[in-house]
Every structure is written in structure tokens, then in C-alpha cells.
Amino acid sequence: MSLLESFVLDLQNYLIGTREIDHGMIELRLEKPAKVGDVSFPLSIRNWSHLLNGGQCTGDCISILDYKGSKKDLGNQIEQLRMESLKWTIQIDKILMNNKQTHLNIFLSRTSKLFKSVLKEVIEAEKTYGSSDFIRNKVHLDLFPNNDLNSESSLTCLRLHLLKEITANLLKASTCSETDRESRITLSLQPVDDRSKNVICGPVLTENGNRNSTTVQQLYEKRASDMRMMAQHKYGVQITPSSTWETYFANLGKGCVTIEMMSNKPQKAIKVTQNDLQTAHKGPCFIFYNCARLAALFKKFEKLVTRKEYPELPQIDGVDFSLLTQQEEWELFYAYILQYPIVVKSCIKHIERGVVNPQYLVTFLSNLASLFSIYYRRVRILTNPREHMFAVVHARMYLLKAIQYVFHNALGLLNIEPIREM
Image (spheres, rainbow, N blue to C red):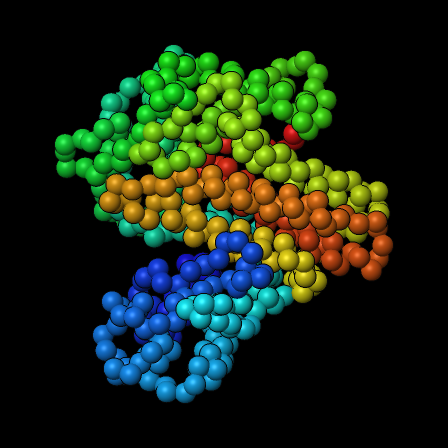
């Protein structure tokens, strides 16, 4: 269980007396947590009534904090909650009421200790960060119809096969290794009348909503060409004719297609237009470009270290993460490192009901690329080599190293190779 999941259960246990399951009443913020708070929950006891068994609360209870049996004023109740959090894995810094006075917004304590423990966990886990063992059945995936995928296959067939591959990756990252229980899930283009659960994959249509006759090979080649064009004309990449570049853009093209196919709920139909460069590839290319930016940043840092302009990164235990004071630094840490394991889990937590949501990974990567791009443009990460700036540079490099692992791991679940140059 991740630190953030543990915090949610600690908070839930404080409010209603159970840690057994996250009931979804506590919301984790994804956008601008530095301004509106990191965690939020409804204050009125009526929102929680379906989870309560009476407890110590009588008919005069107004807020969920009254359920604790304390009839203190709200300010004292909030302070009591904050003090209780000092015993938890993550502590609360402050609690404010929203403008409508319907929710309490929690701001977490941004301690150097919290940064250090989480970043250390990410870097030590590397490729396995985000994995968990919450699925207790070994799930076998079947395709219907079970047609082989080839270059002349339809795009709908491709989408079905990609959905199976990505679901298998998510299951591998989430299944308890010691379980001996088994179940079957069928991924199909229409409901299947058998004893297995059924995940429906919607069709790939043209822009006009008609059957799409484009083949897999045609779309892969077009997207590879699109990626090459955008790299040259938008990002100024100098490309020379070579088999290395051909392979590179072929992989980018396939990655672009995967993101395109997984950008909506699997059961929903999607529309693919070969020649719509602006709308079809702005998202994938932006993700790839910012992943490559990270690689270039670390390459530049290593070059500066080699030239003795920067000292090498010290051991993480010797880094002062209280120097990470920029708003985007907390947002990158909280929304995209702390929450990444929860996002992975959310993609398949209802798979036994026939529900998978790989589009959550695509949205996560798109939003991460957007925030990192803002941070990269606004903050000069590798400053002029001055001794008094080395400590903050080292803290930032560890933060961004963890972000790079998250980038690569999320792309890996989508079967996309890490992008190291763009």
C-alpha cells in the first residue's frame, strides 16, 4: 500500500472508525493542490450517512466531525484532527473550509522527510514503482474473436489486441504472486455469452462515423511520418538518413497509435483520421517531447559533472528537500509521484466486473507532460554553477529522477519504449 493510500485510510478511520476499504468519500486533488489543498472531504454528516452505524452520534450531529462524539466547536475539532495526524504516515499542515462551506480542504505537511522517503522508494524500486499486489486472482485474458494481428488487420482488431496487451501489463503489476485462485476475462468486440467476465472494445471509425478501412500498417507508417515531421519542424531535430532514425520514428509512430487507441474508454467507439496532424498527434508528441526533455536534462547534468562544473549527486540521505519550494515542485511530487500507484490501481481495480480503464494512464501522462513543461519553462533547473545553488539543484535532480521513472513506467505499461531524444 502506498503512503498516500495509507493516509486516506488513516483519515477515514478517524472520521468513521474503519480502515477496511477506501469508500471514495475522500478526494485526492490533481490540479493545483498547492492552492486548493491536497485532500478534500464533505463536511455534512448526510454525505456519510450510508457508511455510519450510529456510533456515538445522536440526531443533533451536523458534521462528520461530530460523529467522533465531540461537541466542540468546528475550529477545535479541526485542530484535534490535525494533531491526530501527527501519528500517521503523512501529517496534516492545515485544514481550511472551502468557499461554499461544504468541504474541508487539507494541506499536507511538505517536509523534507516526506520527500526523502518517497523519492528514495521510487529510485530504489525503479521499474517496479507503482506496482502492488491488490488483485488476488490470477486473471487469464482471452480474445473474441481470436484473430491474429498482422499488417493488413483492421484498426478495430489492433485496438482489441492493444487493449489485451496493456491489460496484461497492468495485471502483471498488480497481481499477488502467492495466489493460486484463477479467473478468466474475455476481451471482445461484442458481448460474449459464456461464464467469463466480458470487457467490450469499441470500434475504430472514420471522422464521419463510418467503418475505417485503414490497415494497421498504413496507420503505423503515417504516424511515423507525422512524428518525423513534427520533430523536424516543431522541435528542430536535425535528422540524417539512417536506419537508426527509421527505427526510432517507427517506434514513435507505434507509440502514437497506442495513445490514440487508448485515449478513450475501451467500450467507446473512437474516430481516427489519418491526415489530421494537429488533433491526432499534439497529445502523443507532447508526451514524448517532455519525456525526451528529461533525458536531455540529465545528459546535460552528467556533462557538467564530468567537466567538474557541478559536483556529483550526493547520497539521497544527505539532500535537503526543504529547498523544493516552487509550487510546481510540490504538484509534481504530490499529484504525479505520490498518486502514480493509485492511478495504476484505478485502471484495473474493477476488472472482475469487466471494467478496465487504460485511458487513465494516457490522461495521467498528458497532464504530467503539461505540468513538467510549465515547470521546465518557468524554473531554470540547471543554474549557473555557483556553490550556494548546488544543494537546490541536487534536490531538483532527485525529484526529476523520480518523475523520469514514473514517465518510463507509465509508458512501459502502454508498451511504449522510453523516449530519450526528440
